[in-house]
Length: 435
Image: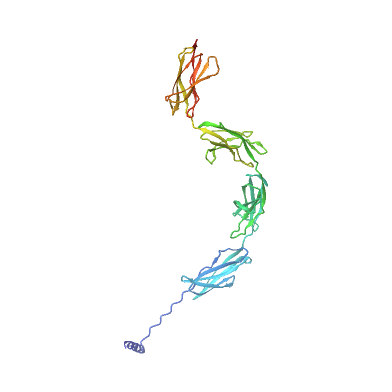
């Protein structure tokens, strides 16, 4: 009821000639916008043998339609939402025959029309070649270096700043392996030195890039002469049995096949202790004019010694036969002191008393040593000593014995040493025997 009253009142007012309100003018639609066209893959577009599909994209706002043209020819586009606008995409393929610069334009329609234009380039992939490749000299000794060089060109022009692989195929093998890499310089030239280990073929290889085709040089053969054999003979370590710390002497002769004695060559002396599986370097020597060598080293433990030659340019290495040396524990020094034979003179047939003291070294001092010692006698005017008898020193090293005296002459104690000490002789004492 209240609603009908309001409508009637409004009609009454309008009908009464009251002025009507002016209509609000409509707001104008915003103008369309368009971005630059992007190209993928990025220009310049490189074409090898197959066609390359190129994608063109641009975005618009406030547009109801859009169009794309390449060299004036329309290219179908599709749209998809992109934020507050639309993203338009079109695709066209280009082959080797399409090399050159191409015009591109795009338009967008809405409350008006806007457009953008540009260009992009399609290029053919560079055709490369490796020319003037050479590996030399043609014949070398094993271990010598070979110079490899050549020139990389692209569409007949020097191609600088490119990586080239130097590869090698050994005689009897079917596969090339990379040995070195070089970078081309001015004019596309490259070169390096490689070490020759076997007879075979060398070549240079350029791998294809995003803008250039790959190429391979013609192979060049280099012959490597066989290494000469070497031999170490007459090797020996002297003495065969020593004490720990004694110095050993090593000798031998190094010869090379068809050349004889090899002068000026380094020979290593190696040692392997009893029970060890490993040879260890100890010292070295240089061969003389006839290939002979001499070296020395201290003996530390029992084991095997040998000489080793590593070889050199064009010569194989070699190893001598082993020689064993037995090393005994180091023994202490010994001394016989305070020797005395009395009385002097003595009547023939009477008893002679002989005394002395046997000591062994003990870290800078001396201590009494218990051991068996020989009593020796040399008659007057004789040259040789005669063994008389043996006695044992007591725990303090004291020696004492008696003997009947029959002839005038010299007396002494002689100690031959034992497993702990070296030997020694006492001073001599002359005793005259009276008739």
